[in-house]
Length: 87
Picture 1 (tube, rainbow, N blue to C red):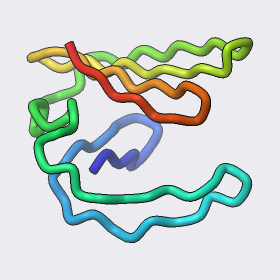
Picture 2 (tube, rainbow, N blue to C red):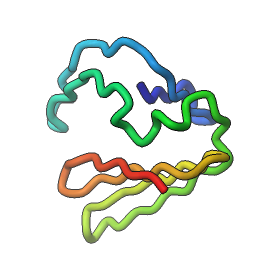
Picture 3 (cartoon, one colour):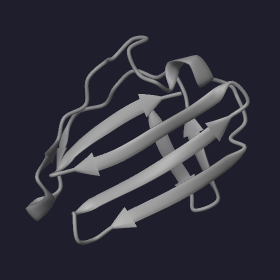
Picture 4 (spheres, one colour):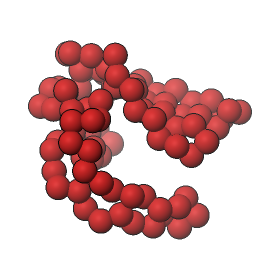
């Protein structure tokens, strides 16, 4: 589960997923267990060293890159889909 507690930090932790929910015109968010399949799994318990945001309003794309001691996770949206990748 990735949770933003305040604008100053992000928590990545193992947790039982909660129910999905509606976000009005943005659509429905489905929440499901992912086990070790997420790029965040290998960074559990690590400190976030840096966060970088990219935006391309013309292409409708947003990205957030989160750096940990052991690598990076990139979260991006493309045509309404969330894509996660790691390096």
